[in-house]
Length: 256
Image (cartoon, rainbow, N blue to C red; front, side, top):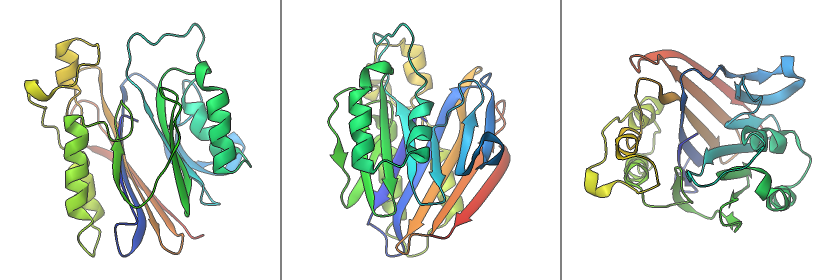
């Protein structure tokens, strides 16, 4: 996942409104959003990275959920890193509290390349990054993260937060409208591009909310809604690589 923006306690119906784009190489095999019955985890609902076995975002029937982005630093290298997708799966399958799992993340931070993760349930959210190892309990507000720390003001994240802020002022949440926000493919102006140590050509190409290149781009968009009763609605929309058109959409509702 490379872009997440979310509103927490900012809407009269939904406690959490979370929007996310997963950007990845088109050649990396991926399974659509579904329950992991055949993997031995029937309570887990997530897409799956078929190469490393983890996931970038998922929920459980108990209401636990997690979402991950990579932290972009070309100088950060490890000889044999664990796949970051395991971080989400491990939380969803763990009996640890959120606080206990944050301690696990802190203890094992150096085993992974850079990441940001949100871990939560219907009543609590904590953010953690192994870049600064400083957990943050999320309170009421509008937040986001791309491939830097929480709320780092990259152009794509600023735009995503602004668009979501406008949406949550409305009583009725239109998922089609939210998906259209995530599909914005406008590149950032040169004078606003972050300097993350990658070539200008790539910095420019991956600056939109929705990325399209010949080999890499936005593979899926997801919307997670949790209302004040704890009911969850999770929708994933997957795209055709060559055109960015919708390939399929899957929606699940989980009463808590």
